[in-house]
Length: 237
Image (cartoon, rainbow, N blue to C red; front, side):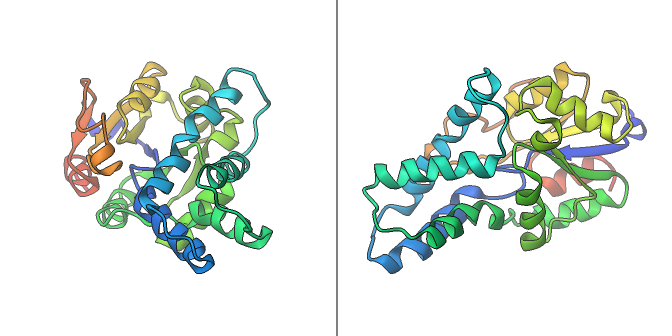
């Protein structure tokens, strides 16, 4: 395809741009080990993340109105603390740990790759994370976004069509002028169904040894890349 037709790149963030698993495990250990807990911190991170899709599905299916991901994360955190029999966590500690999602660290190639892409394209988020979460994460990790788009602006969670199309509309572009970039096949399929162009970025260690899918592109996406730097190469940046 003609890269000159692309005006903006929008990115899935959790897993594609940042390493949520390692970051959350480290944050949980830092916060809870001071209280005498010794856990499998990676399992804690995986367990918290496992509640993510079911919580959003209630919103998607009309079981509850739209709420920010921060709220869902807090509800899920309270559940996972009970699952691990962790008690006596103060409100201050609870809030700090929940905001660990605001402090996720990028993969090593993310920032240099994004800086290259930013020279040629508008770059922004297309995440289920709320705006404050995305802004704080960007400040913490040096992510050079031009714009924050995704679930909260659309009041809908991916893969709902409204999420992608609201971002396209806010950019005043056509879907075919926007390239959706993600490490998750289903996300790209959903975006492609709305007319966006698609780019797969491989993150085969997102879930560590527990990863069961998304090792590679499973569809004929417009671009298939090994990492963010490879995507920049393919787009001539």
